[in-house]
Image (cartoon, rainbow, N blue to C red; front, side, top):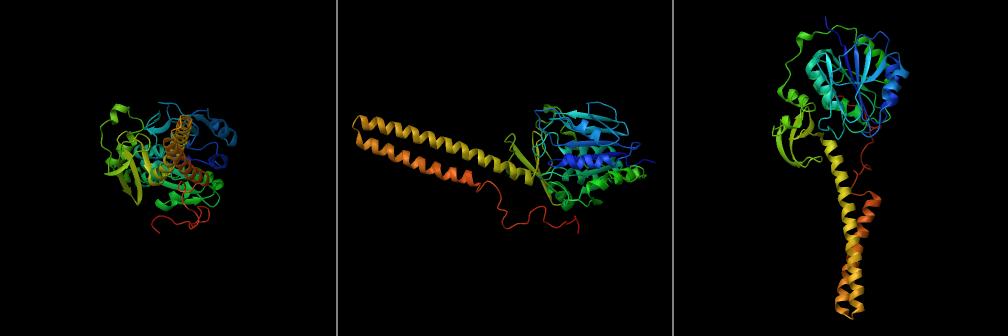
Length: 350
């Protein structure tokens, strides 16, 4: 009988400490394969396989496209590439970003759920925002098991808190207990015959990261068209709402949760303000130069008009500079909201 032998783990900020603690608790004879996505810089080599190999009894390596899956091994997503699963092999693809990340957690979780169903155990560890929540929903939909690190011990509790909020997770545990839990689950039989059919929407989303660009060109994503544009390519967005988790995907394949869209919009606002500040500074300099030239030619009326424009540009630039320095309008006001670490744990469905 099949077992829970596909273990997929996602983490972001603060995730290395949680990952090393987790793999330390895995046995050398683990009858399952482990797949890890950690948000990484795309411009530098990753030492994560070396770190995980030293932390526990299992060997960790960077995943390679088309490589066969072996039990008792840890596979790590390479920088700037998604790690995806197919029957018996891994795929490594530089597909569209999800939640502004590549590698992202959701593509790994989603493809595992599509091809392995009840055999999958998904784990969300420390991290910012909410990557992994949609993928964990897919795992649960296909009969798999969902685990979240206890947010109260996570260095960055947002990712596990989001998972707990939107997904009926089976376990909420500190990192040191997740390793032994995975070892036990990997030996438990599962009923693979009871898995529901893969929904067309999940199948479509699972195929996007590994598709060639021309394969997704012109394909309409599932959901309803909304008046919001993709921060990545400025194309139109289609919105879906699954178990109250609002997500967006554009025609080119970029995918976002609502929180990720909002985060991108804050960054765009800041960028626009810096551009406006520079434009106003240049305008003031030009007006001051023209005013000086006009005074030198005894064109006092024109000089006064240019001087007034320069003063106006300087005043507007000062206002924008104060906004940029204070962060006002760029980040949410947290004065009236609980911090992630202080918020109570509320499981989905409760």
